[in-house]
Length: 88
Picture 1 (spheres, rainbow, N blue to C red):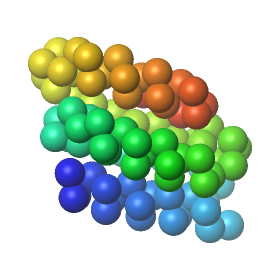
Picture 2 (cartoon, rainbow, N blue to C red):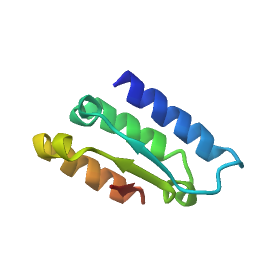
Picture 3 (spheres, helix red, strand yellow):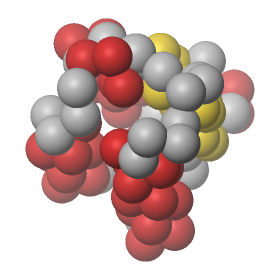
């Protein structure tokens, strides 16, 4: 959880800077995607970015994590789609 939040925060800081002009991707862990509070935190932070910045974001989850956490993946997928992000 903490590492994922830290890395997401760093990625969002980078995206908010004028230096970032290309797509970015970040791998999420199982503990992060399983917790409702993390999805709410992610939504809150995504809402602070412009649609153009959010369109550059791609989150990734390993196949093993995805297969063992189907409901969490459905929630994550719909959240990311609503904000214009990709899930790979």
